[in-house]
Length: 225
Image (cartoon, rainbow, N blue to C red; front, side, top):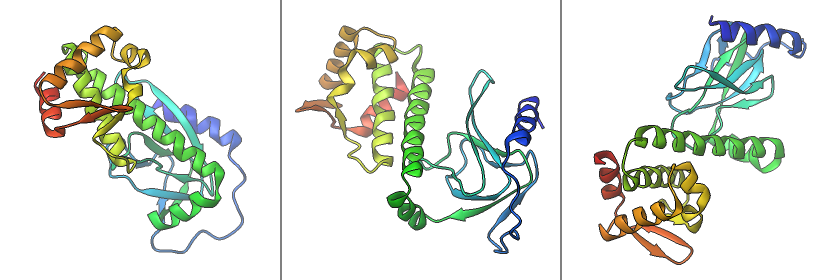
């Protein structure tokens, strides 16, 4: 167990709710985990789980090696939330833990009645957006302005598709100063990059936003920039 997880598990030992006296779930579908065992890694196929017993530390591991704890999941909590097909974070047991799978159908029903779960689901989507933005910027850090913009547009498109929105439509907020700051460029440079992509037939300005006219060309341009 890493020093990070050892410190986390010692902290959780002091705050973990008392174990239930109810017998452990008998379903063959449950997964029993030892302390330090990983439930999922960033990049694994997304699956949802309910914590039946024990505790999990849910955290992000950044490229520089540091860890950012998102939350601790205790009995009754659902973990693995998100819109993307893969996890962008890691969950590791900090005590002997039992989890059971949660189907998409059950999850949708729970979202309708559990406000706290809905809030956590929204927060997970925000983290995924930050993850895609950070990854786009990491790969595009030395790219020319149009390449950085193309990479970011491609990331926004993938996020929109994962959330059930039109992947070809980008809201007009994209041209804001905040986005320019994220891409480490001026608003004028952002506007010039968008004009470049428009001249190439990749994007088209529309009312209230921007439409990606050729998503494949956008991704090729981002990869080649």
